[in-house]
Structures are given as C-alpha cells and as structure tokens.
Length: 255
Image (tube, rainbow, N blue to C red; front, side, top):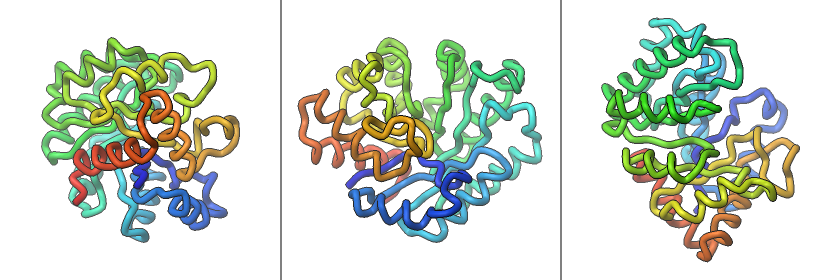
C-alpha cells in the first residue's frame, strides 16, 4: 500500500525501461504514484504516463530554477491542465537559491502566481525548496497557501520550520535522505512529525535511498524510505505504509 508522492518517471533516465520500472514498483507494493511535470517538456510526458496507468497521477507546475523562462502563457496553460482528471496538484513550485539561473525576485513572483493559481483551481501545491526555507515559509504565509494545502517536498530542513509548515496545514514528505547514515535532520523530523502528517517519496531518478545511494532512484525504492521511518518511529512497516497512503489520498482527493 505504498504511495510514492513524487516521481519523475518523465525524466530521460527512464526512456529505455519506463514500463519495467513501473512494474518493479508494483511488485514492491507501490499502489499509487504522482509524476511531477515542471516545464514545457516534462508536463506533457507526465500527463501521458498518468493517462496510460490508472494508478498513476500527475502534478503540473513550473520549477523555480527555470522561473525566468515562465510566461503568462505557460501559467495559463498550467491552469487549463488543472482540470485534467489525472492532475491532482500544482507544482513543483517554490524557490531554489542553489542555482543562479533565475533571479530570486523572478522566482518569488512565479511562486506567488502559482500559489494563487492553485487556490483558484482548488488543488494542493507541491513545494520545492533548496537553501530558501525562510523565504518559502514567509511567502506561504503571505499568500495564504494554507487555503490550498500541500506538500513540503523532500523536506530537508529542521524541526522548527517543519512545525511552522504543519501549522499551515502542510504535509512533510520524506525521501531517500532519511536513510542516509550522515543525515541527522530528516531523521529528527521523521521522529518528531506525527505520522498522520507525513508522506513518502523517492524524487526518482534522484536521491536514491541507502543502500542504493548514488545509483538511479526508482519508485520501488520508496519501500526503503517507509522502512526507515518505521524504524525511527518504532512503528510497523505496515502501519507507516497504510497511514502515509491514506494521507496522500486525502490530500490529493483520490478515493
């Protein structure tokens, strides 16, 4: 009953064996996935995959690294696609201060516009954050993002910011880093955040969990994330799988 809430099966890394990777995920107990499209290239592929498999859904949005390329036409396109029956979220969106392709002010503007869009179409948001936590939280508060709700995708910050996000009604999603031996914050977050506010993901093909770190990640490995969270929280694997699955279905309004 595993729900991988963030996959990039639309990435070029899966062009040769995408169907096999999806089959591997099913055999590992993955019952649902959300393929995230974040630009002109990846959004159509995400929708195509979601249309092909009844247990796969998609999210559509614009990545902050490429915010400088985002036009009003692109945002209108995303809003039109939000009515697609397999689209369950807007994103990934947010801020990324690691790369300098898009100026911070441009990123913030595109981020705010996407939050407003999500509120208009009544879909949750998927938040990408890299080295920008304080600004992310401030914008979420200023834009009343709680009205949309959503996910702090691949959360990697401390507990204090996680609690602020929880207060806004957001879910905290953990991926491969919670299994890394030297990653302290994700483990503390896994311990402190209530299970009914946690989600799991792979962010494949990136951030493969231990012992596959450094290799291409794939949805089947979300089981390793759930197992580590179960170990940290002192819960059974079955409980973590069941609750995080329910959390995702509640957020994405999947019956």
